[in-house]
Image 1 (spheres, rainbow, N blue to C red):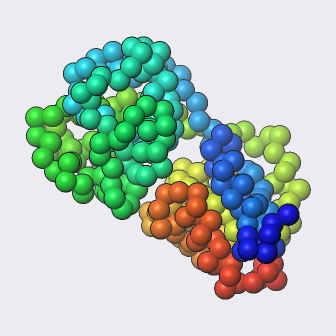
Image 2: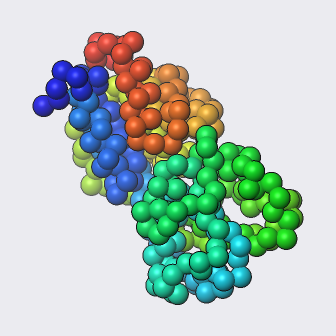
Image 3: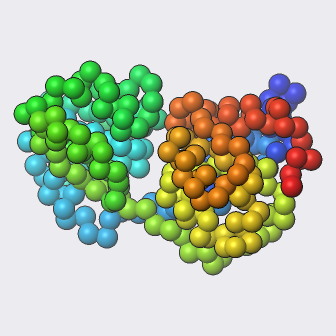
Length: 270
């Protein structure tokens, strides 16, 4: 039962679309602030079907100067592969993280991060750091998921670095079968939707079908980037775009709370 102090989301129902293994903390924050959560993961994270390419990169990790991790999933799967293949990270390897949450995860799993943007949580923010300006002649490995953005690697190559990718996980769209929860609770009772990636947004629209689309297109979206907001608009979403100040669960809850405080209880649903 939320206390009076922690009831900033009282009366709200939030659809959380994060992968199941990454949504617990966010759901607890929403529920702890008085809100209700519908868990509806639209992406599953799994190891690559063929890990041989990433394994070869890890086997030669001593040849690299900088290792960049682009997400918490990249940390979890990358460190697992490193421990399995070679046991440890080279002591001389400079570690870089694309944002605060990824840096925290890397520090939990291994050690202190050397390079991380002080503001922002994307490739552009990392590329803007002083450490990423003079990389000519350095060898850089980027731990990521299959099919990730090429901007980071392409820009570092333009700056004179040698770049290789270690694709250590893949994103899978879950099967829609066996998901009665969405049908049970989607009869106009969703106030906001959390979507934390462009791929997740596309998967959400496919998984809910035509009826779900009609329900969700006018709902507020809590997002992590303006890129996500632009894609949502292009896909027909007309509700408020609630872009978090940073890529953390706390920031997502804050931006939902700010919107909810001006909207009132569920009478705003249409």
